[in-house]
Length: 257
Ligand code: HXC
Image 1 (spheres, rainbow, N blue to C red):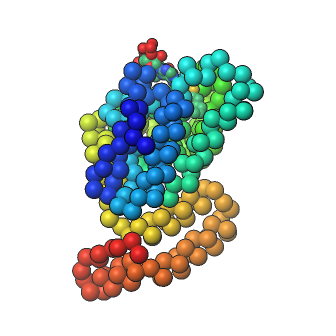
Image 2: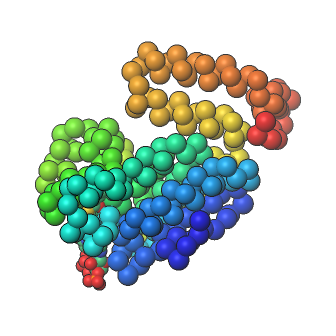
């Protein structure tokens, strides 16, 4: 669902989604979040697409949910519209998503980056959950995902104080995968996505699901589920091809079957 607020491009098997509300630092209006989520759902079904990059371009990722759109709302209105429910749909995307973060990733912006599977950040990226400064708390997963990513004590500091942290800190704490020069952030994210897109797609999908179990379920259950996925892959042509190619000392040709 390409709109003025969301630019959709294809680079081979990788789809690149660019948030495009520069006049408000890509503030995440309801319609922009809907466009992101529904486009990801569409791409999840499109056969030629094997990985997705989500970015705000080279200046800013997103400065949060659109404050204008909720400043006057009552609690009842917020609960009735349940506008944050649509964020849950991102969890169901089965293809890998790489965030390319430049500049501010604050509030809902930080939450959107953390809803992706990997994060490539530029040297000038700034992360934070500043909701406390405007009288609320994170509502799209920030308290949960940030805590899982960087630990309770650090998350407590940032969520309760509204302080921001740098790309370098995010790298040290394991929130981001790589920090690269500003102008290379999208390129690096696309290159990572392309590499993953060249791998056997069924195995990639099951691997993503299995890694997510490591944070979502108890260890014993995660190990059982992982083992089931491992066995399941022996029914795919790509497993036969991958192992045969290794033994024949040639490059495998994966078909996604
Ligand atoms: C609406 C926003 C916005 C936001 C920036 N703008 N962030 N509009 N919602 N979240 C608008 C400004 O009003 C301004 O519009 C324009 O973008 C440029 O912003 P400035 O403030 O002039 O830029 P700068 O001085 O560079 O400061 C950048 C900034 C600051 C530090 C990022 O904009 C800021 O603090 N923004 C709010 C960050 C925040 O609180 N995020 C959390 C939101 S709550 P005009 O018209 O004046 O040019 C949230 C809840 C999540 O995310 C819940 C789940 C989704």
